[in-house]
Amino acid sequence: MSDNTTTRILAIQRVVACASPTGWRDAFVVSVADGVVELATFAGAIERVTTDAPVAVGEPVAYHQVAEVIALGQEWYPAR
Image (cartoon, rainbow, N blue to C red):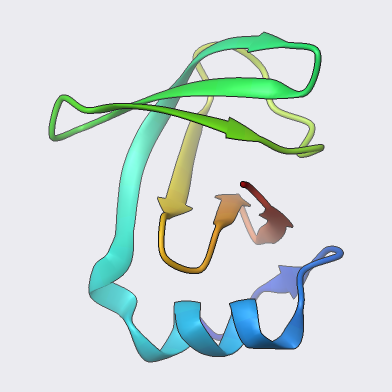
């Protein structure tokens, strides 16, 4: 995942996300309310993160829990 555009993520977040590619989880956005996004991963887990990523319900995203990053297409955003 090196052809991305990072948006307000820290350099360490990018390093961690790139150094551990197995940490990425594919997910769909289940709900969005007041900056809190609920994700349903393909493995069946539900994750709640705070992010300013411009996501919509039903949209596919990738989430890296350790790096605290959400990827929306080629854009990366902080997700804590």
